[in-house]
Image 1 (cartoon, rainbow, N blue to C red):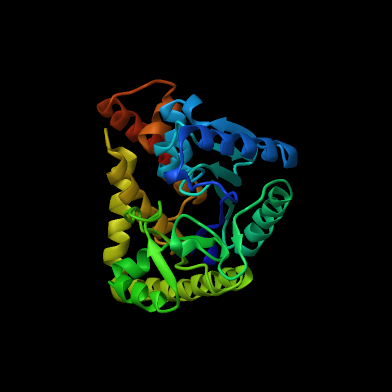
Image 2: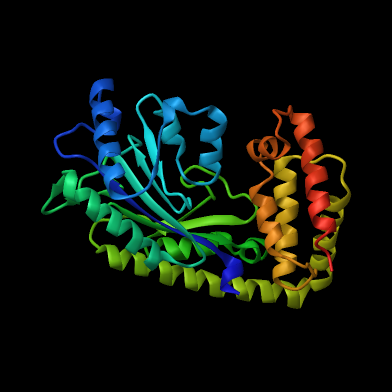
Length: 331
């Protein structure tokens, strides 16, 4: 059941070079010196693909953003920023984002400890050739005070329709906030929840070790899993017929509509995903629902069609694509 609730894990480290102004207080030449130093160091430790953001088309940057490989802040700094991405897309190192370095590893499921080990090894290798800003009392120095200390943010992406539909989201957020955990939308701070997807992460990185932060987020994620499982059982016990009707109506619309927007498709696919998770609808390959949710954005639809489509054309193509996949997937 946890695999249907915990979608992915991410561990991110914020780092800055010693005696260099933070990205938002620097000039063009100093920022480019940081970028050059970063790419030189990264090229020595792994087979990363290195990209200067100013050389990338906006469509590629938007796709990287959707895939959580880069942030909006990195795009805003595109004249001075860059990113290193591993061949399997599990590791990305952003350069000249809010901090000089944002090192992150993302893995499927609940894999925080493994993600931490991977990014920690890369960070250790980088520190051999780069002098990171560090204070004996405060720890790593960062642009945002909440990242001072370890500079570590551990986060888990969770699918929580049960908690939302039983109106327990606010209570859950209030409870975990007392543990030092924050709950955000799928794309982090300032983003809204889409398709019942939420990101939980530690609020602060000062005062706890990296291992303690990882353990805190993991244990909290497991507690939220238990709440979600109980909420789904409550839905089935009290409202199974209405819920099944809603799931099948969502499947029917998705299978037969002529055009559909990204937001409506995401909402309906999330209902079908919940139905598949709790056996209200039988699908040959339930994983295809997750693949559809990832592939229906405007950028991904253009890529699938091999054309630059306008909004109406995308809505038409999206409906045909979703319907084709779903009709071949129902038992």
